[in-house]
Length: 83
Image (cartoon, rainbow, N blue to C red; front, side):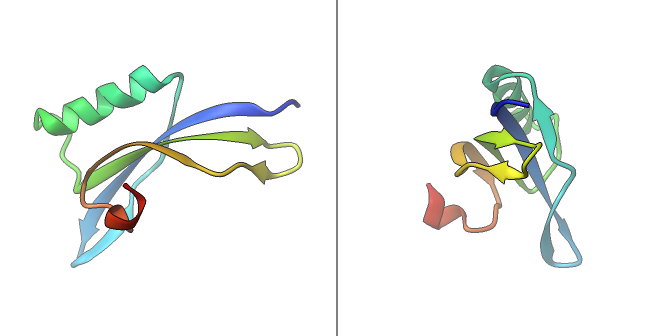
């Protein structure tokens, strides 16, 4: 398999005072991921925060490129360092 671009919407939730990653969602494109962020802004999707990440992936050999953070909203780990 060739290297493929992956767009991931990673939500975060508070559980017992600890910020935890929710279930990541692989999106078909950046616009779909940004629509999810817009749902958080509108109060439709209730999570502590989320990031949208783009990266190149070669799943056959387990190679994952450096993530490019496209969007960040709310409470996320390392949010201040990666903006």
